[in-house]
Image 1: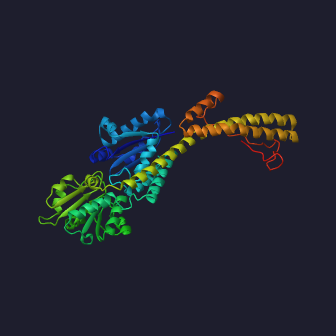
Image 2: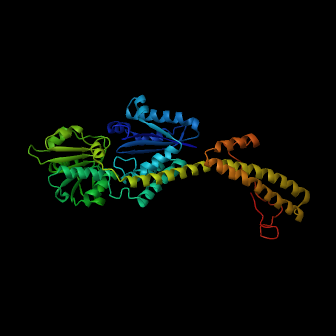
Length: 447
């Protein structure tokens, strides 16, 4: 089992390229798991400023083929040249996979350092993969550990204590651009009904905003507002709502982009100032709306540039928690990788033991001496298996589990990759009953 991730983020690319790479990303995981693929599991994490694909392959030899398969799929779905896609993604392998994801989940790699929204997005990415049946066991453990690490960072550090997020910074910018800083007096239109829109609604409420209308091109506005408040809009009522709005917030990322001409048509010549906050990765509004008279446009790039830096001490504390969690996860994964080898050795040894015990039973029957021999042989086998088991764990912790597996093959002809037969029963119906109670000989033990 080998994990790898392909990462394209705001740290290395402009957000326009990230947005184009994200096109159709929700279908990438299921597409790369087709028959004959080197990929056995995949989870896609796509947010407003990143596209990351986490995969599991059978061995390190499959990494290049797995990367090629993902790059090809993203190229097909985004329409971007395959070479451009390949250059846009950084590939992480080994410990860097967990270290990067844990840092992302903790908000250390966000445009607004310490923001807590990303932790929920990491959880949702795993949930969606599980619902689609694309998440392998190793990827489930990886993402669940990332979520636990994010909780630890939130509980043990002051990182994110100010409640900063992409939405909160955007609203701060909108406040600074407005002559009237009181949100209670503002009319707001929100585009979108997803988790991002829900977070936006909550922050608007915290700031005292009560006049909120919601539009969804998919027609989900009524259901959304029934549980979160606000007034649902339709195609027919949208124009009038935008004309009366002080702030319009786009966080839907729908295929339909509002043009500058549409916004201009909704506004009268002497319309009051309008602030448009476009938080959708694929843009809910044509960037040209920022050139309209009386319209201010706030984008994700604006948020990134305006985001305050968290205190260095909190960031360092969070980084230490992330590093510790990543090391622990890698050690756990390496230990798990030798479990099959340990089981295979135990099964092999127990099979030999049962063969020899059967000879004793056939020759001596269920007599006292036969029971003594069986007890002694089982105790000896347990002792013989102890050191190889300990060494397996030690080698795995040092990343040398392959040496252990190779040694089993060389010494015993045990192929760990092949399904091992079920272990023989410790005592068949016609075997001698072994005393498992504590007595003068101690407690009988099986390996």
